[in-house]
Length: 200
Image 1 (cartoon, rainbow, N blue to C red):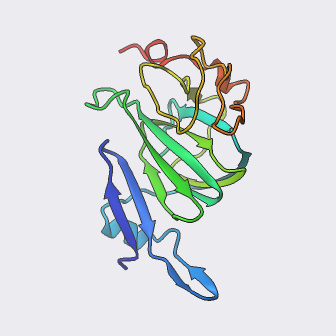
Image 2: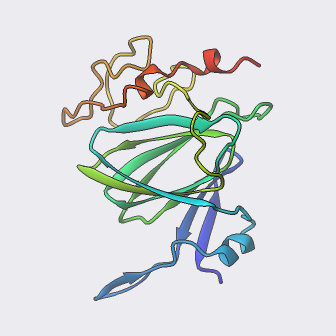
């Protein structure tokens, strides 16, 4: 017990979780997930699915959510570095439409817990990144929704990314400081802005 440090973030429902790292000249060991420690910290979510992806520098995945079957996600990076973002989509939330981002790397071992009701996405900052996440609900084909990663009303500050907003989610001339061009899937370039996705 007591093997994690949990930090509540400014938006309710978002947490940074830092496992205890035990290292010596041979390397290190850590528990990446312990249900008892999580419950002791007041986090009683149940995970039903683990996912892993690999992406090259400049890839931006998101912003994604499930409509009828929202997922809580515990995300971490096991190789490389990413900027990971959550956007509050909870109707009636005082922070609706606001975002929070965290740099996750293989060196800092940080985990980012994103509760149900958020859109999620990340930008790969290293040459390659391997990204792992646990989910509180299964992936449901046909239930996925998304938001434009560059919606000016949300105003996510993607680190080092420069370019001119073209009026949609197209990558346009966006690039990282070393010239690496932004790389999105065809689907992610078609998501609309928040105000046209949700009408409350």
